[in-house]
Length: 211
Image 1: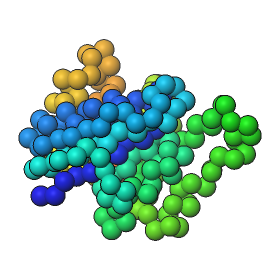
Image 2: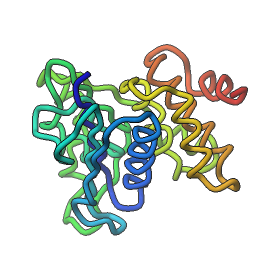
Image 3: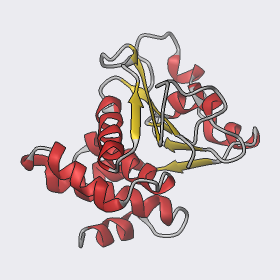
Image 4: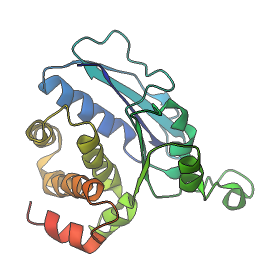
C-alpha cells in the first residue's frame, strides 16, 4: 500500500484543524504510520489555513508534494483554488465546499472573487467534487458543522480507514453535547459524495436522520 496524501484548506474559524486532527487520529487507530503538519497560515478568523496529513505503512515527511495529493479538501471555494495544484491529476480529487467567504479587508473583494472557480478547475482537467456542505449544515441548524460534512465526504474518497474507525474516533474526540449532531453531519457528508447529483439535500438529510 502506498502513502495517502491529504490536504485540508480553509479560512480561520471553519474548523480546518479539527478535521485534520480527527483524520490523523483515525489513521493512527487504523494502525497506520501518520504524519501531520502544524498549521500553515494564519489560524485566526478570516485567514487562510492549511494542514497536511499523510498516512501509510511508513511515512517519513508530513508535507504533501504538489501534484501528489489524493484528496485536497477545500472548505471554501477560493481555498480550493489556492491548493488545487497539490492534486494528483491521475488519481486525485479536489473536494470543495461550494461556499464563498468574501474577504472583508480587500477592496472590491466581491467583484474580484473568482465565482467560477469550480468550472475553471474542471476545465483544467481536475476531478472536482463540489458539495453544498455549508448549506446542508445550516439546514441542520448549525453552519459550523460544514467541516464535519466535508470530513464525512473525504472519508469515502480515502477508504483506507474503515467507517467504524471513523465513528469510534468521533465518539472519542467530540464532546457528548455535540456528538449526535456531528455524527449526523459526518453521515450526511458520506451520503452526499456517494449520491452527488442524485438525491436532494432534504432526501440526504432525511436518510441520515436514521443513522
